Length: 268
Length: 267
Image (cartoon, rainbow over all chains, first blue to last red; front, side, top):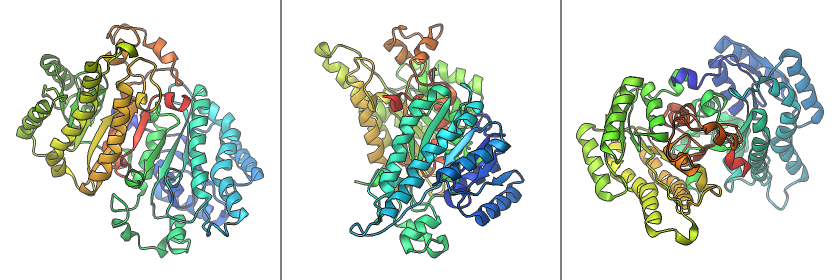
């Protein structure tokens, strides 16, 4: 029961959608630092390649860019084909790619509904479906394959922003995790979700300042906003993701674990 | 971001109630294997002393027996006085001591209600309250003190047994976890709960008709009812407890995390 064994993810092959920045990049870093081989996707090919190269150099191990827009079915097919070409099995899928849209309720546009539902709920479903053959090959009763879906505390409590489709989409992802968790556990594929609170990402920056650049925000002010008096860090989200992919996490199934500094706990 | 740093619990001091057997013993073993100094308490002094000695010799490290009954306020106060005499701070409190009572609804007795509620909920609340000075002494913003409450899937879904006070008591544990967590996070004390499913314990053994035996009984049969096709192991529950007490767990607050092989998900 040594920590090195309980939490080992060495030599596992992982795919992280939206892995070029934000929470996806944090999880990619944590995986790479501990010996996993990581594929990252992103809509922005340049950014995807640049992050993969930077992380490969920093951690001295393989981080591979597979650019693509997973909100489109044809890109999901292309992504699955690209992974299948390179790997015989996939141990870990992190459904992290997400999007949000804020507008007043009266003017909330249809595209802001569809785009958010597609990326946050529909894409994880079809990505899991199409990656099943690769994940089945990695799955054993002793060490199941793992799916982590990145949801949000916005799917568990009322969000602070006018992001009317985001909360419902994340709630859908949370319940999908429970439903697919129950369905796939018999094949030794374990699905869980993480519900993050505030992390210093471009997405949260857009909600706060209207500018989708994390440098536009004074994150220090979360000292007075979040119960833990800070924003989340790579250690927080990366650590929880490692747990869920390790021996230690092999009996937790269909759960949604908050990583929010207590934002949900203090909500009334 | 190396695993040895993210999940380190080395050098911490922990109290695990009900640590002489079952899930408490598994968590104590996981802590001891990774450099934690562990105090275990249980009602039966002899069993508690013997287990502490056995755990120390099996896993190395220091396991200290402090017998006591946390179901009464006097028991809680005696326990806290005893550990205060030995340690100036506690990094970790695992509120694990718990009991159950099975009886048909029509005949369910008052004592079966009071004993379960007192041990599982009231004892947890007052032990945490009386431990606050010791927990505050260990707590920093960087590395908060941790309280891990052991709830149960029976507090989240319908139990399989006629344990009518147990399910409600564990639901109370989960809500108490959230409420205390919201209150104490500002003091850098992080409280979370684990909701275990089936583990090879005395308690489950009595429920499934094995008469309290944990060795030499057909746990595989019990495991077949679980979605994962097995029952829980020390690695499962200790791994989760270690996560919650480590750097990696320092942003998860007030949560109840299942460790149940998917029994809640399937319900």
